[in-house]
Image (cartoon, rainbow, N blue to C red; front, side, top):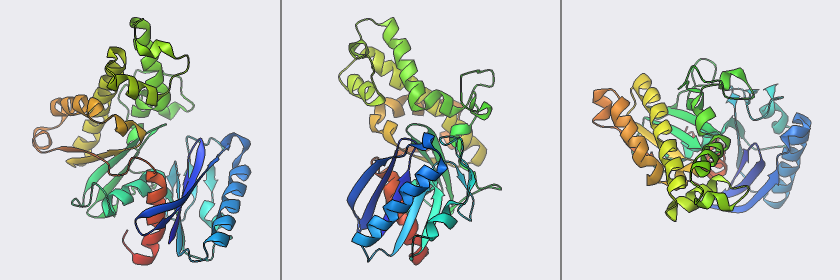
Length: 312
């Protein structure tokens, strides 16, 4: 029995991994705008509640967006502007008597895919998660590749348009894959397409979300389909850059956007065939992650489990 906690920009999700099943799922608002201390108090309360109800918890894993060093310090998190050099692991250990790990959320999700998911037959792959932002991780020869500052795999920060001056919170986000493929960017793209097609179903809702774009596309709405095709093309460009640099032929894509499936992947593969170096273009694989929901929580729980079983 292992506890997984996934800290997101909007909500903190948690659950108990019992065997292969996630039980007692919980979701609470992150309220990151109220400061670091507010989030830490929520995490402390969450740990206390779970330990009281599940005294047989063997380990805890926590996933957080941003760069996390091997000591469990959150060095920087674009989703949480005031999170810099936060000793998260040290803080949480005060409220846990079992092994506890803190890791980048995409790294934790990649762990889930390596151990139980779409990467079980691969010891080397790139993992990409598409949701509010664009996260990533690199599994190399069965191990997580961290890089020199623990930030390796941040494919969302691949620059795909150096002339771009999109409005972003930080300068280092301008022109990046995430600036074009994050949730808010997809919604803006959809609004542009809806303006060109007054008959689009997108115009029927004042405040549509990414899930609405998928649904309308499945229902045959041309404007929505164009959005997903364009998103796939952008994804293909970003993946090609990462794969050419690393010489890795397999990519596993998870996160909410991956629910759109082949409508995005078809155009992504087309872009990749045109931009990958010939040896990679002949053998590349673009796979859908096994876990598209509760990925962060499951990965975090498996991260905790790995502390005991030394799987990762």
